[in-house]
Length: 168
Image 1 (cartoon, rainbow, N blue to C red):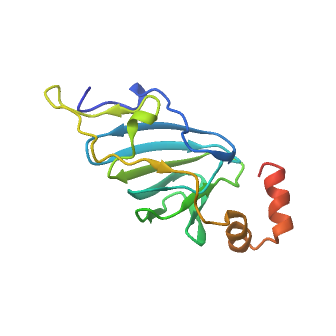
Image 2 (image 1 turned 90 degrees about the horizontal axis):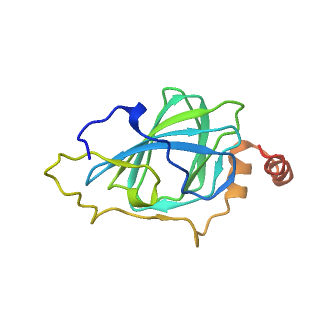
């Protein structure tokens, strides 16, 4: 494994989250204590609520995306940053017509072994120590994402359901 790599030399990964729509491609690097992921979410991308025992910092490089954390949400646009606290229920929805590109950093590292083509950045003499890597929890969460999204977006439940149905 290299200590440094060019983004062009990292193969596209795959989305490990369950989604309600859309697609995402990723490029991920990691060390023992954190990871960084470049994520491109296409129009209609809509993840399901999830948590992980890692703090997350997001930076929007290009495009815009709605980010929901716990019982609130906000629109992030190019140049915006946000922090998602450890174990906070969160999800994202690209309601726009173009891709959104984000840089995401997680600490501690979200388990890279479940993400296709993630690249560890280590010296040749180092041994990767992923003993503190965390998993993503996708089930058993007590959150009504539809209610939160409708409220934050100013939609009735019926309008929200119609937007979900059409793949928006």
